[in-house]
Length: 99
Image (cartoon, rainbow, N blue to C red):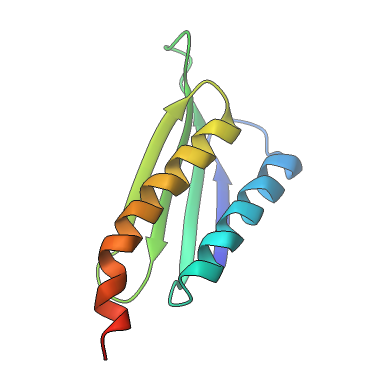
């Protein structure tokens, strides 16, 4: 799976990119039919407690899957977003496992 990471209106972070790649690699191992993932990190300065936004869009056979989360730090946002994607992929998995 190919991963593209964008940082919107903020500086890029090698540590955050590596953390995201590691988490997505586990997802790719679980679902081998994933094609690529577009990740976007944003900061919403209008929110006091939260405001660290992570958007992920997965390309796979059939319609794309999208998830987003807004947490107090980016690591939690990545974890929550991948958890949401995993739930959606579990629902879709039966389509690819039945042949």
